[in-house]
Image: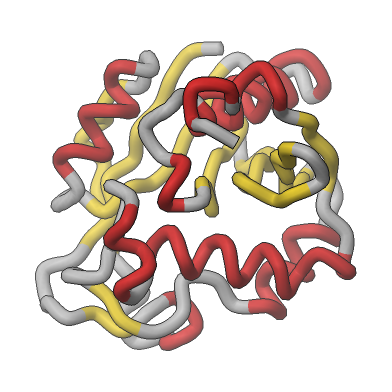
Length: 180
């Protein structure tokens, strides 16, 4: 599959518990270790360890008004995201695209489907997410997709190895949002 054909050839479905191992592998490959350096979303210089904990993932799959969205091409898992309702808005997170396919529009297609779910299925008028505030290139991509920086900062869970082991002590999240 070439990245240029990715958006039109995708199929979407909700994850089940049977998908947990494949999702953990995909998310880890997009953010951690040397494999993640094939794409531009790597956090390998910022964090080691887990990007997603299997038990947290299972809870996200099981909870109400939460969907772990899988994107496949020809039956092969190529992208995923978590979309849910948190407070008064949709929430977007755990976004991953296979590193060698990044940059060809597949991520925009996954993001658009997550936004559609929050807006059309759940009636949300806003989508929010948190991004490590040092990720300037990633934040710029989200801004090109219509998100704006809110200036709201949240602490990074640096003491919880389920979400990664920081290589720096200045990691924090910034909240981004977009009207749907």
